[in-house]
Image 1 (tube, helix red, strand yellow):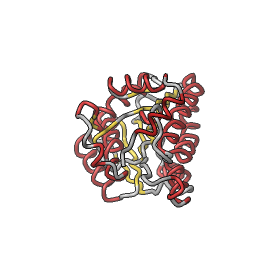
Image 2: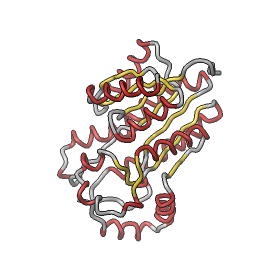
Image 3: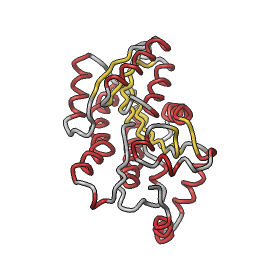
Image 4: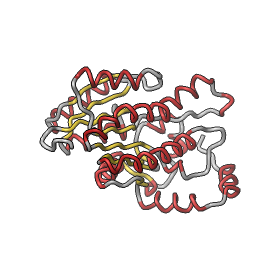
Length: 264
Protein backbone atom coordinates (compact mmCIF):
# COMPACT_ATOMS: atom_id res chain seq x y z
CA UNK A 1 0.00 0.00 0.00
CA UNK A 2 1.06 3.59 -0.59
CA UNK A 3 2.67 5.44 2.33
CA UNK A 4 0.21 8.21 3.17
CA UNK A 5 3.03 10.22 4.75
CA UNK A 6 4.91 10.41 1.47
CA UNK A 7 4.19 13.44 -0.74
CA UNK A 8 2.23 12.45 -3.82
CA UNK A 9 2.94 13.56 -7.38
CA UNK A 10 0.56 14.17 -10.28
CA UNK A 11 1.53 14.28 -13.95
CA UNK A 12 -0.66 16.50 -16.13
CA UNK A 13 -0.55 16.75 -19.91
CA UNK A 14 -1.64 19.91 -21.67
CA UNK A 15 -0.72 21.73 -18.47
CA UNK A 16 0.28 25.08 -19.96
CA UNK A 17 -3.21 26.63 -20.07
CA UNK A 18 -6.94 26.12 -19.58
CA UNK A 19 -8.18 22.96 -17.90
CA UNK A 20 -4.68 21.47 -17.58
CA UNK A 21 -3.37 24.54 -15.80
CA UNK A 22 -6.41 24.57 -13.51
CA UNK A 23 -5.87 20.89 -12.67
CA UNK A 24 -2.28 21.67 -11.71
CA UNK A 25 -3.53 24.33 -9.30
CA UNK A 26 -6.14 22.16 -7.60
CA UNK A 27 -3.82 19.18 -7.18
CA UNK A 28 -1.10 21.44 -5.76
CA UNK A 29 -3.65 23.01 -3.42
CA UNK A 30 -4.38 19.52 -2.13
CA UNK A 31 -0.73 18.72 -1.41
CA UNK A 32 0.45 17.12 -4.66
CA UNK A 33 3.74 17.93 -6.33
CA UNK A 34 3.18 18.37 -10.06
CA UNK A 35 4.85 17.34 -13.31
CA UNK A 36 3.72 19.71 -16.05
CA UNK A 37 3.78 18.45 -19.64
CA UNK A 38 3.04 20.45 -22.79
CA UNK A 39 4.88 21.82 -25.81
CA UNK A 40 5.42 25.40 -24.61
CA UNK A 41 8.27 25.54 -22.08
CA UNK A 42 7.76 29.24 -21.33
CA UNK A 43 4.10 28.73 -20.43
CA UNK A 44 4.93 25.67 -18.32
CA UNK A 45 7.57 27.61 -16.40
CA UNK A 46 5.03 30.33 -15.65
CA UNK A 47 2.60 27.74 -14.26
CA UNK A 48 5.38 26.07 -12.26
CA UNK A 49 6.52 29.35 -10.73
CA UNK A 50 2.97 30.23 -9.69
CA UNK A 51 2.44 26.81 -8.10
CA UNK A 52 5.66 27.07 -6.09
CA UNK A 53 4.79 30.58 -4.94
CA UNK A 54 1.11 29.97 -4.20
CA UNK A 55 1.10 26.44 -2.83
CA UNK A 56 4.73 25.68 -1.94
CA UNK A 57 4.68 22.41 -3.89
CA UNK A 58 7.41 21.11 -6.17
CA UNK A 59 6.66 21.71 -9.85
CA UNK A 60 8.60 20.01 -12.64
CA UNK A 61 8.55 21.23 -16.25
CA UNK A 62 8.74 18.69 -19.08
CA UNK A 63 8.24 20.05 -22.62
CA UNK A 64 6.99 17.33 -24.98
CA UNK A 65 5.08 17.03 -28.23
CA UNK A 66 2.38 14.47 -27.46
CA UNK A 67 1.76 14.03 -31.18
CA UNK A 68 5.09 12.20 -31.30
CA UNK A 69 4.64 8.43 -30.88
CA UNK A 70 7.81 8.33 -28.75
CA UNK A 71 6.54 10.94 -26.27
CA UNK A 72 4.77 8.64 -23.74
CA UNK A 73 7.82 6.43 -23.24
CA UNK A 74 10.09 9.49 -23.06
CA UNK A 75 7.86 11.03 -20.36
CA UNK A 76 7.83 7.80 -18.37
CA UNK A 77 11.60 7.35 -18.66
CA UNK A 78 12.20 10.96 -17.59
CA UNK A 79 10.12 10.46 -14.46
CA UNK A 80 12.03 7.27 -13.67
CA UNK A 81 15.35 9.07 -14.12
CA UNK A 82 14.21 11.86 -11.80
CA UNK A 83 13.13 9.33 -9.19
CA UNK A 84 9.54 10.55 -9.37
CA UNK A 85 6.71 8.26 -8.31
CA UNK A 86 3.58 9.23 -10.24
CA UNK A 87 0.53 8.72 -8.03
CA UNK A 88 -1.97 10.55 -10.23
CA UNK A 89 -2.21 11.05 -13.98
CA UNK A 90 -4.33 13.62 -15.80
CA UNK A 91 -4.59 12.98 -19.54
CA UNK A 92 -5.82 16.42 -20.50
CA UNK A 93 -3.97 17.36 -23.70
CA UNK A 94 -6.25 17.76 -26.67
CA UNK A 95 -7.48 19.88 -29.53
CA UNK A 96 -9.78 19.56 -32.52
CA UNK A 97 -9.31 19.67 -36.27
CA UNK A 98 -11.62 22.06 -38.10
CA UNK A 99 -11.38 20.83 -41.69
CA UNK A 100 -13.34 18.05 -43.38
CA UNK A 101 -11.95 14.54 -43.07
CA UNK A 102 -10.72 14.13 -46.66
CA UNK A 103 -9.43 17.70 -46.81
CA UNK A 104 -7.13 17.08 -43.85
CA UNK A 105 -3.66 15.60 -44.48
CA UNK A 106 -3.19 12.15 -42.98
CA UNK A 107 -0.31 13.32 -40.77
CA UNK A 108 -2.67 15.75 -39.03
CA UNK A 109 -5.17 12.94 -38.39
CA UNK A 110 -2.39 10.67 -37.10
CA UNK A 111 -1.03 13.28 -34.72
CA UNK A 112 -4.55 14.10 -33.51
CA UNK A 113 -5.34 10.46 -32.70
CA UNK A 114 -1.93 10.09 -31.06
CA UNK A 115 -2.66 12.98 -28.70
CA UNK A 116 -6.28 12.19 -27.91
CA UNK A 117 -6.34 8.38 -27.98
CA UNK A 118 -3.14 6.37 -28.48
CA UNK A 119 -1.02 8.57 -26.25
CA UNK A 120 -3.66 8.52 -23.52
CA UNK A 121 -3.74 4.73 -23.52
CA UNK A 122 0.05 4.45 -23.69
CA UNK A 123 0.71 6.86 -20.81
CA UNK A 124 -1.95 5.18 -18.72
CA UNK A 125 -0.51 1.73 -19.40
CA UNK A 126 2.99 2.90 -18.45
CA UNK A 127 2.05 4.56 -15.16
CA UNK A 128 -0.85 2.36 -14.04
CA UNK A 129 1.42 -0.64 -13.42
CA UNK A 130 3.13 1.20 -10.57
CA UNK A 131 -0.15 2.51 -9.20
CA UNK A 132 -1.61 -0.98 -9.07
CA UNK A 133 1.50 -2.40 -7.40
CA UNK A 134 1.44 0.32 -4.72
CA UNK A 135 -2.32 0.04 -4.14
CA UNK A 136 -3.03 3.70 -4.89
CA UNK A 137 -3.62 5.73 -8.03
CA UNK A 138 -5.84 8.41 -9.50
CA UNK A 139 -6.34 8.74 -13.27
CA UNK A 140 -8.40 11.46 -14.94
CA UNK A 141 -9.05 11.28 -18.66
CA UNK A 142 -10.60 14.24 -20.47
CA UNK A 143 -13.60 13.09 -22.45
CA UNK A 144 -16.36 15.55 -23.39
CA UNK A 145 -20.10 15.95 -23.75
CA UNK A 146 -19.22 15.51 -27.44
CA UNK A 147 -19.01 11.80 -26.63
CA UNK A 148 -22.83 11.84 -26.30
CA UNK A 149 -23.70 14.42 -28.97
CA UNK A 150 -24.42 14.19 -32.70
CA UNK A 151 -21.28 14.27 -34.80
CA UNK A 152 -19.81 17.20 -36.66
CA UNK A 153 -19.42 16.56 -40.38
CA UNK A 154 -16.23 14.63 -41.15
CA UNK A 155 -14.80 15.36 -37.70
CA UNK A 156 -12.96 12.86 -35.51
CA UNK A 157 -13.40 14.77 -32.24
CA UNK A 158 -16.64 13.13 -31.08
CA UNK A 159 -15.38 9.67 -31.96
CA UNK A 160 -12.09 10.28 -30.15
CA UNK A 161 -13.87 11.45 -27.00
CA UNK A 162 -16.28 8.50 -27.14
CA UNK A 163 -13.24 6.22 -27.11
CA UNK A 164 -11.81 8.03 -24.08
CA UNK A 165 -15.12 7.68 -22.25
CA UNK A 166 -15.44 3.94 -22.92
CA UNK A 167 -11.75 3.23 -22.23
CA UNK A 168 -11.90 5.03 -18.89
CA UNK A 169 -14.91 3.06 -17.70
CA UNK A 170 -13.32 -0.25 -18.71
CA UNK A 171 -10.06 0.69 -16.95
CA UNK A 172 -11.87 1.71 -13.79
CA UNK A 173 -13.53 -1.72 -13.64
CA UNK A 174 -10.12 -3.40 -13.76
CA UNK A 175 -8.17 -1.14 -11.41
CA UNK A 176 -10.62 -0.04 -8.72
CA UNK A 177 -10.24 -3.31 -6.72
CA UNK A 178 -6.54 -2.41 -6.49
CA UNK A 179 -7.06 1.09 -5.10
CA UNK A 180 -6.75 2.89 -8.43
CA UNK A 181 -9.61 5.14 -9.55
CA UNK A 182 -10.10 6.14 -13.18
CA UNK A 183 -12.54 8.92 -14.03
CA UNK A 184 -13.63 10.25 -17.41
CA UNK A 185 -14.73 13.84 -17.04
CA UNK A 186 -17.04 15.24 -19.70
CA UNK A 187 -17.07 19.03 -19.75
CA UNK A 188 -19.10 21.06 -22.17
CA UNK A 189 -18.32 24.62 -23.23
CA UNK A 190 -15.43 25.80 -21.07
CA UNK A 191 -13.66 29.16 -21.04
CA UNK A 192 -10.18 28.26 -22.36
CA UNK A 193 -7.93 28.51 -25.42
CA UNK A 194 -9.60 25.45 -26.97
CA UNK A 195 -12.08 27.32 -29.15
CA UNK A 196 -9.39 29.72 -30.39
CA UNK A 197 -7.25 26.79 -31.53
CA UNK A 198 -10.25 25.04 -33.07
CA UNK A 199 -11.35 28.18 -34.89
CA UNK A 200 -14.86 28.22 -33.38
CA UNK A 201 -14.51 31.17 -30.98
CA UNK A 202 -16.78 33.48 -33.00
CA UNK A 203 -19.53 30.89 -33.33
CA UNK A 204 -19.58 29.62 -29.75
CA UNK A 205 -19.36 33.14 -28.31
CA UNK A 206 -22.97 33.60 -29.40
CA UNK A 207 -24.12 30.82 -27.05
CA UNK A 208 -25.85 31.86 -23.80
CA UNK A 209 -23.70 32.27 -20.68
CA UNK A 210 -25.49 29.51 -18.72
CA UNK A 211 -24.01 26.92 -21.08
CA UNK A 212 -20.47 27.83 -20.08
CA UNK A 213 -18.27 26.78 -17.16
CA UNK A 214 -14.87 28.00 -16.04
CA UNK A 215 -11.83 25.72 -16.09
CA UNK A 216 -11.70 26.03 -12.31
CA UNK A 217 -15.26 24.76 -11.93
CA UNK A 218 -14.58 21.83 -14.25
CA UNK A 219 -11.40 20.79 -12.48
CA UNK A 220 -12.72 21.14 -8.95
CA UNK A 221 -15.57 18.81 -9.87
CA UNK A 222 -13.16 16.47 -11.65
CA UNK A 223 -10.78 16.30 -8.68
CA UNK A 224 -13.61 15.50 -6.28
CA UNK A 225 -15.01 12.87 -8.67
CA UNK A 226 -11.77 10.91 -9.01
CA UNK A 227 -11.12 11.04 -5.27
CA UNK A 228 -14.64 9.71 -4.65
CA UNK A 229 -14.17 6.94 -7.20
CA UNK A 230 -16.72 8.06 -9.80
CA UNK A 231 -16.05 6.46 -13.18
CA UNK A 232 -17.82 9.20 -15.17
CA UNK A 233 -18.50 12.84 -14.44
CA UNK A 234 -20.52 15.05 -16.76
CA UNK A 235 -19.76 18.59 -15.61
CA UNK A 236 -22.70 20.85 -14.82
CA UNK A 237 -26.44 20.30 -14.57
CA UNK A 238 -27.14 21.56 -18.10
CA UNK A 239 -24.55 19.21 -19.60
CA UNK A 240 -25.87 16.31 -17.52
CA UNK A 241 -29.37 16.85 -18.81
CA UNK A 242 -28.29 17.27 -22.44
CA UNK A 243 -26.02 14.21 -22.37
CA UNK A 244 -28.76 12.01 -20.91
CA UNK A 245 -31.21 13.09 -23.60
CA UNK A 246 -28.67 12.62 -26.38
CA UNK A 247 -27.71 9.17 -25.14
CA UNK A 248 -31.32 8.01 -25.48
CA UNK A 249 -31.93 9.33 -28.99
CA UNK A 250 -32.28 6.78 -31.81
CA UNK A 251 -29.33 6.81 -34.26
CA UNK A 252 -31.49 8.18 -37.08
CA UNK A 253 -32.55 11.22 -35.07
CA UNK A 254 -28.99 11.87 -33.92
CA UNK A 255 -27.85 11.76 -37.54
CA UNK A 256 -30.61 14.19 -38.53
CA UNK A 257 -29.55 16.59 -35.78
CA UNK A 258 -25.94 16.21 -36.87
CA UNK A 259 -26.86 17.48 -40.34
CA UNK A 260 -28.42 20.61 -38.84
CA UNK A 261 -25.55 21.73 -36.63
CA UNK A 262 -22.72 23.97 -37.71
CA UNK A 263 -19.96 25.50 -35.60
CA UNK A 264 -17.61 26.68 -38.32
